[in-house]
Structure formats: C-alpha cells, structure tokens
Length: 220
Image (cartoon, rainbow, N blue to C red; front, side, top):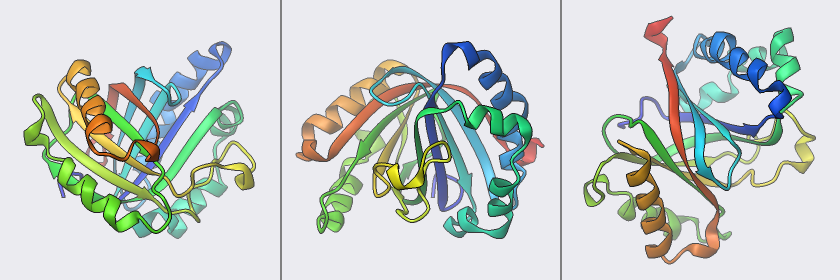
C-alpha cells in the first residue's frame, strides 16, 4: 500500500488558546517521537486546520499492522502516560480518536496539505459504500493530488482518551484522506468528492489541513 503499514491511529482535537503553546511544545518535543518509538509504529504526521468543520489539530500514526493498535506495547504506553501527557490530554476539547484499518490506498507519497472527509456509512451499506469510494479515490483524476486513502474505524477501540468512553460519538466512522501538493487542490478534491459521489448523507464533516511536520522510525 502507498501508506506504510496496514493500521492507522487518527487523533484530532481543539485546545484552549491559553494552553496552546504548551500543547504544541508537548506534541513537538515529546509526544510524536514517543509514539513512533512504540514497537510496530512506523511514522507520524501532524497537521493544523486551514479550513475545517473538524477540530483544529490532527495527527496520523501509521502502524505495521492493525493489531499493533491493540498490542501490549501500545496498551502499556496508554496506561503509563507521562505527567506532561496527562496534563495536555486533560485539556483536549472535541476530541476524535480513530483506531482504524487502511482499506483503500491509491497513489504514492504524501503532500504538503491534507483534505479529509469524515463518513458515517449507513448500517448494511458498508460494502457498497467502500466499493464506491474505492472507485472515486483515484489521484490521477485530480490535479495536484498525490494519493488518496480510506481508513475505517474499529468501534471497540476508537474511543476518546479525554472524555467518558461511553459518550464518544462516531466510533464506527470512516475517514477519507487526500494528500495534495497545496491547500487549494485539497479543497477542490474534497468538494468534488462530496458533490459527485451521491453519498452526501454519509458525510459528517470535512476539512483541509496543512502539514506541520512528520517523523519516521528511522528518524529516532
């Protein structure tokens, strides 16, 4: 697959401006590297929203297999958060946490901007929906689009770390990821997909994000 590995952890959240400096320092100086160091994790990417009906900050973590996201090593990391992590996680607002399988991945590489569409497929319609997205996610049909991917949440594992797990919405949601060379083509591709697929009722939210930085296992 163009995305390294078969599993992906997606996290997205807002943060109060009073804590934003410490939040960004924590992510940049501790959290991403700490997570990528876990056995089975391959890389992580961090984004900030340019325009979005989703939270302001977004991170994507790729793993060798989906099972890594429920492995003893990862569960141990969740159970033994650093003091700095606990402080910042307690400040998350509107958190989305998706523990997902990568089911469609077309194209090669990552872009400077990311378009994202959050879907909530109708129960019983998953196979039809996945097939339609697999056909629609064709980077060659969009100028300046590098790659396109579909990730599907595992409902049992996709629960917020910041809220009561019983109140976490959308644990069955899917996300379309569109890697683009710039913000404008990412926005255009998101709008074209939403308008043309005939699945508008399944679209929960969408956005366009700018890449802040990424880190791979080979970097640490």
